Amino acid sequence: MSSRPGIEGSSGTTSGHTPADRSGGPPRDRTGGGRAPIDVPVLAVSAAVVVGLCLAGVLAPEALTLRSGQVLAWITTNLGWAFVISATGFVVIALSIAFSRLGRIRLGRDDERPQHSRISWIAMMFSAGMGIGLMFYGVTEPVTHLMTPPEADVPPGSEQAASEAMSYTLFHWGLHPWAIYAVVGLALAYSSYRKGRSGGFSAAFAPLLRGPRARGTARVIDVLAIFATIFGSAVSLGLGAAQINGGLTTVFGAGSGTGWQVGIIVVLTICFVLSAVSGIDRGIKYLSNTNMVLAGLLLLFLFVVGPTVFILNLGPNAFGGYLNTLPAMSVRTGVFGGTEWLSGWTIFYWAWWVSWTPFVGAFLAKISRGRTIREFVVGVMLVPTMVSVVWFSVFGGTAIHEQLAGTVDLLAIGSPEEQMFALLAQFPWAGATSVLVVALVAIFFVSGADAASIVLGSLSSYGADHPQRWLTASWGAMTGLVAIVLLYAGGLGALQNLTIIAAAPFLLVMVALCAALLRDLLAERATIPTTGPLPHLPDPAGPSGAAPAVAAGVVGAVGPRDPGPVLADPLPRAEQPATAGAADTPEPSPVERLGAPSGP
Image (cartoon, rainbow, N blue to C red; front, top):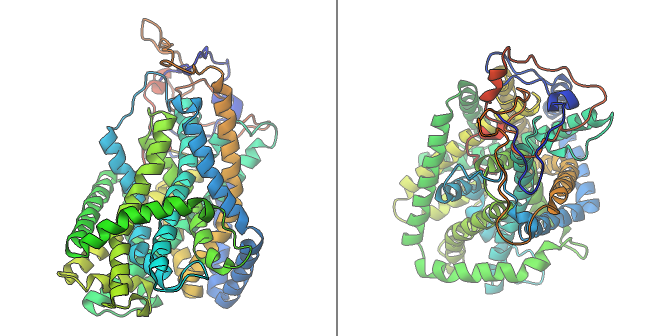
């Protein structure tokens, strides 16, 4: 492995100190010859809080529901504006970086090119965006907004309500949520592939973490990332279990309720824990890709047998309405009413997306190595947004059409998880398509939770590429336990409440991450030419091809060497390989080994 210079006029020189020397190196095993060390303080604090919360849910579920409701009310009343402004700010930051000179910076060295073709890259973007959330809310959200409009002065069930329903649905699944992912994925990709930093999620904060308190701050960041990920994953598990239960009830006449949903979570948790610790990454990736094809076939089927002309008319109208009302929706805080609606929809969505950023951001970074910042931002924000437009135009448009025509009253169905199946029942082959939906949700459930448990293990192992299997399994089991306890304590509402509460402090982490990214980027800005190609710098290995030696613990150093946080009291260093040659073939970084997430 070689240390390579940055692109624009950087000397590419490195100091005599390796990142491990300067930052305390996180003690990670990358040689495959030992076990990844565990960050005991991060693991102990995060696990203790999660276990304590579960005990509270078991011993005093009513008290937990009451207290979480009180905390949620305080957050939405006093900090709801922060979620709204931050989400809009992420859109502005991402687009401003992309369409400035900074957008020409490559996420890697100058001569590095993307590892994936553009078609494959777009397909994986689609994979990241298609998940349990779109399956659960594809029908429920548009028809709910149709009959209970977000704006109080809009008559329910009217054409205006239908237009507004589609606008708000696309708002919740369009540019804003994907900008939240984009800024995190960009920061992680830039830190790992451009600056060559190691150390996990908190390594991206290196420009801000200096001095004796850097180590403790980095650990706080990793703990908050764990909280956000585990509660965000628990919500997806709860939604997935509810929809699978709805499908089993509709197709096979099975029972319904919390007991059934808990049983489904237990079975699927065992499946994804076994998957996560078995290392069968190819199988999970194959299932994920197969899921994308099956989802596309389901979409095409409903488009053909459903109200095709209505869908074709609705799509452009919905997209235009979304763009037209985007500025007003982006800054709506409920100051003159509507706070309860915002809490249940917009703020919950922003919190849910924020909670998934440590996981999905890592995936986006992984598949985007070698692309320019501009290409990354445009691809991450626009491609999934267009997928959402198509998805909700077909599923949401069909639901709105059937609701307005009086064919079926979807809102009269008590549980939202059964509304998708009630809609499919209006068309041919309802049994087959319902079974397909159940299979889709189950595979999304397993593949997404599998990778999320690996991320949780990595976060509590100094960002290790291969966290110990028992640790990965423990985090997977705890994620399932959190979902079960919160379902018993207060159903899906309790899951949503805890997600907003957990995401609130992590929102500050994301703001700080944007500041660290901008500080890094602005340091390079002066060296970026305004026109013409970026300067090509020779390989620092020289004509002989011999790469200069660097620390074995550094992964993929491709830009100007950044030592990471300067710690006054370094963490213990990992045992280094016996030979310098071990550093020549690095293990993949944490973002390089994760499969495609299923998305919220």
